Amino acid sequence: MFSSLTPGDVSAVIQMAWEDRTSFETIKERLGLSEPEVVRLMRHELKPSSYRLWRKRMKGRVTKHRALRSSAMNFADRVVANHRRANC
Image (cartoon, one colour):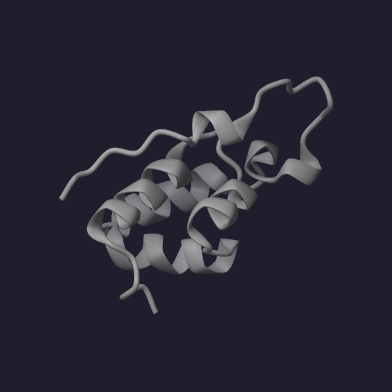
């Protein structure tokens, strides 16, 4: 499933998934992975304790979904997520 992703893409998904301000919609736009696919990738790539910590952190976090954000949240996650670090 994730075989089409480069190591740099996997690293970028993990980084964006950990960022509070980068929404799942942005990850979908950038790399084509839906929220359930991001969850599966994180489960596969992270240590079990890190995965549990990430899931606990993401549960109920409105910033991870554009539709749940308040209009007072005035930041462009597309700009925030535009950076890429090559960790390969």
